[in-house]
Image 1 (cartoon, rainbow, N blue to C red):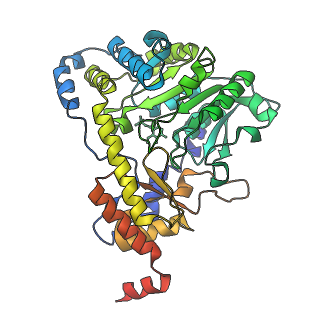
Image 2: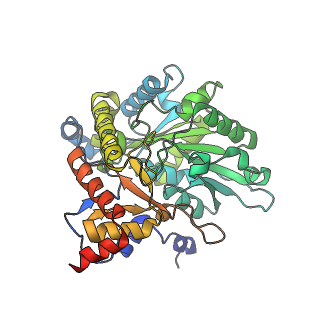
Image 3: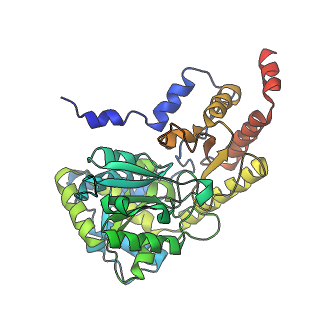
Length: 405
Ligand SMILES: Cc1ncc(COP(=O)(O)O)c(C=O)c1O
């Protein structure tokens, strides 16, 4: 009776983390650096907007988001990417109940007969946000992961894609700034992928959820690079208030770009989607209109990265991520380090391999890594990272001695 494809989705990273740590008690005050859940608090206007619009709970919300929200999103895209006269709120924007559901549903919007083997594929970086895998698996496409390693700057190499693969590709997920490595795709890189998407007629979906959290320069967006060619054809971008506005529980994001995709997405959502409830829609519009809280958030993340540099600089392959709020540390064996950090110091992290599919030989390109989320206030971040450094720096023999005492 059950869909066998669902059995291919048994390895959600946080379940694996729970399995790894089991009932081992934390070796100190627990500090959770495993999940990318911002802890900086909601913008102060948000709750007031929800309450002021509470009467909208009495209405069915529109599938694409209210006209006011779509206008606020279009205006934000205009300001952020210089797209003022190019984005049409009605044609190019659809609000989402968090971007995850949109990233997933997009898999139902595309179909292609497939390449030489008659099989459609979805391309995604490796490691990657797990929702992309679910979109492929649940829509009968073969997920094909593309190495995103230190050697290629943590971005899949478009030149490594062969003709057969591109012929079979229906959807290409790109994540920039990248979760987990913080790499940012430059304008030339984006232009190359857009050109490929049009040449082979696949959809390029750029997950830009971390676009507003950056160290120095604002990351370019796929839509502003596409706009230089005069159209958004074959290109969509995803954005979210979860990270930008520290509101992951609001469940608010959007998809924007190619109007053919947006029209189909809205149609699909009219039948089977979960629109953003009215009061949350109204609060979201307000959030896209406000930049003050976003600037303040960005500063907090910068300070956390400064703290990380002080605590870890020169060790564990530390580098400042260009975007996002994760450290991607090379600790030799991510799983072993994760277990030790929890058991010896109460610091919870995520082994890199849980975000990365094994290769054909059973190797895992992220096995050496640990993902560390810098989502807390500076104090907590410093405490967590100081303990992380102390545990990972201590020679194994010394740690054994300490445990015996
Ligand atoms: C790369 C990436 N894309 C999408 C999402 C989903 O965000 P949302 O909360 O908008 O569903 C996340 C959340 O962690 C993410 O890391």
